[in-house]
Image (cartoon, rainbow, N blue to C red; front, top):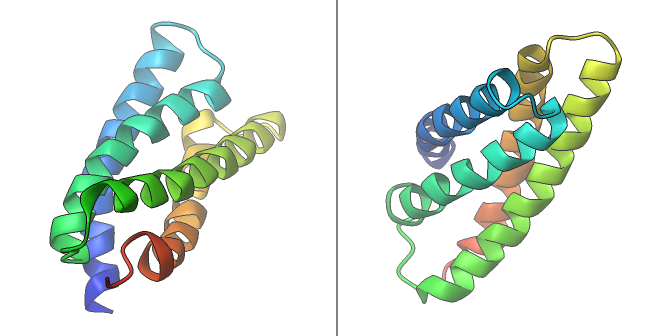
Length: 122
């Protein structure tokens, strides 16, 4: 539970970066919400990797293999989030509500994947 709490705390910072880019891309650049969600997820992934490696998982193994594994899970999470946002918008939800649902679902799935694979003990 302690690691999950740390993962969630790191997620707040990564999510703030994600949502900031999402809103900017939708409101200013008029991107489709699903595409802006993917771009925001990629930005948030960079924030999340470095903080999770050090703070959440205390990973001491080689950096680049973990970075690659993490980004496979982040990419899968971004695709899942984009699908959820698109489905939510198509169902009539505001894009931020759809993104909020996607955030919760992707956070739980990616925690399990990162704990078991990306930052597994060396």
